[in-house]
Image (cartoon, rainbow, N blue to C red):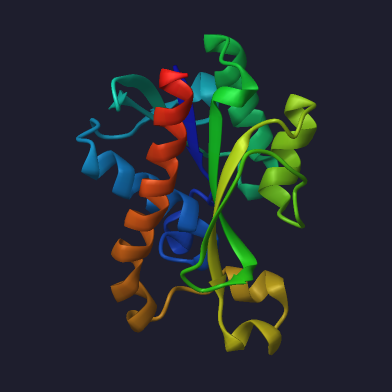
Length: 182
């Protein structure tokens, strides 16, 4: 069983913001692989959807704990299902990567991302994979990071998101498939 977590903030005012790239990508995964609608599961402090990708049972999770406390939700689900940390993939925004760049990492530090930092703290390990979605634009250097990540994607950026998410999904599927058949 695999756990794919999209990071973001739960309230509607954040729905189309750069910081919610993880939630948005998770929606694209759910649509592509025909997962059922997300449902709130209070015991996991977030929304979940259950399905299969590449013959592997997968749980999709959108933490509702706010970005900076994402580890609480991930930890609750991980411990309930006894999922190994190496079977977790986190999808998040990355304000240090140019818009549209996708980077996959098997493990590593938080790299300044508070959601990843929270997960590392709650799980006690950096041993989980992550897909980072670049959100940086020239505006990033002109305003504080906190303000930048909470801005909505521009119309032009929104038009590019489906292609960007497809690329992120390809990287994720390759990872799931490799680990599944090893």
